[in-house]
Image 1 (cartoon, rainbow, N blue to C red):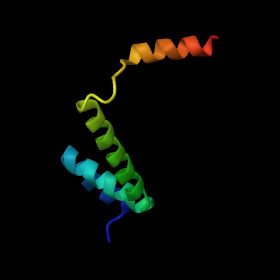
Image 2 (image 1 turned 90 degrees about the vertical axis):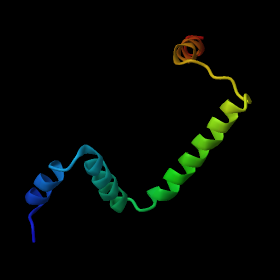
Image 3 (image 1 turned 180 degrees about the horizontal axis):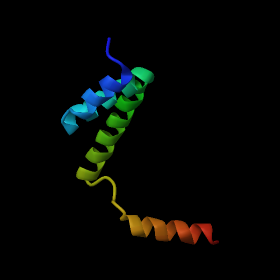
Length: 75
């Protein structure tokens, strides 16, 4: 059996896409319930994208949001 150090050396030698996939798989093994959370966020993002494309919501740029937040905080 290979040591952790040997496995790490092998992993670091992989192309970046494969390393990212490996990291994702290892992290998912630590928190198997995350798939449900990931799916919920994916569904929410798709719903919001649909609303934007359908013109149901208006987009606000980041600096405008921050300016409004600062006004509210300093009241």
